Length: 148
Image (cartoon, rainbow, N blue to C red):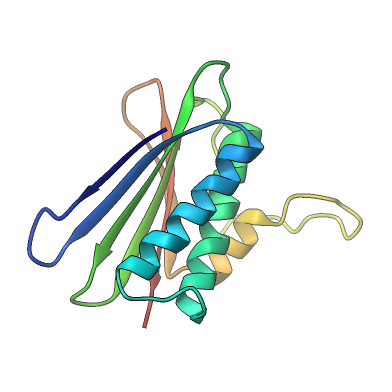
């Protein structure tokens, strides 16, 4: 696991971690995000920290379930804009061809389905979300949340 913490300007802060595309890696992403948010001033016991932990857990779990390629990690990147208390969460995986639905087009899962609710939570809890493909080898699913 590689972890980078950078402050590129006096206001914007970044955190990046490369994690194994395993359930343990997804759990670690959630814990790292909650810890980093605590370090940036939103303690573990706050609603903002809990919301971020849930969003990271959902995006990281999707990267493990739907974006896993043998031998390839996924990347978690957090970008904090303190001037408006907005956090951008990005999870990049190794399967660009497996694209998520676009925002606003999610279909509800069957009532008895055991999965399929993760992006519904992302859509409900974030101010906006989406996905990008840039290099032919990865995709990034992202969301932004106002921490308050």
